[in-house]
Image (cartoon, rainbow, N blue to C red; front, top):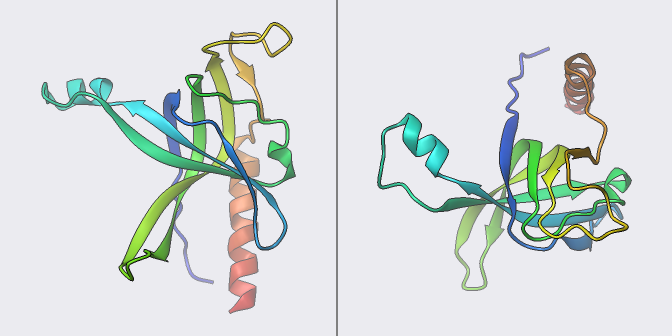
Length: 150
């Protein structure tokens, strides 16, 4: 068995677009939205006083466990995710690589406009957080399945 490496990313940012719903080719539900992450915090760490604004990342949530996803533009959230990429061909025939992030866990830190019947505006967990051991076990199971296919 070969050794694998893993990358897990953690973002704190604002939902920049309303989540869009799709169905994958295999029939799984999928929600996609853009996340705006402020540059100011990191620019201070690197003493780059000219870095202002935000970086925008595409986040996708796949599977039935996200069916109750209640995110709206402007909500401040944290996202634990894994980076993914895929090759795409544009309408003019250009090939390029698109990077996106697949969510593992999302926590609402603050709702911009919470409806009265909605979740409270304080920290609310939308998806159970896997502990490190269970996350490691899931990643190892995925690697074993991948190795078995080869």
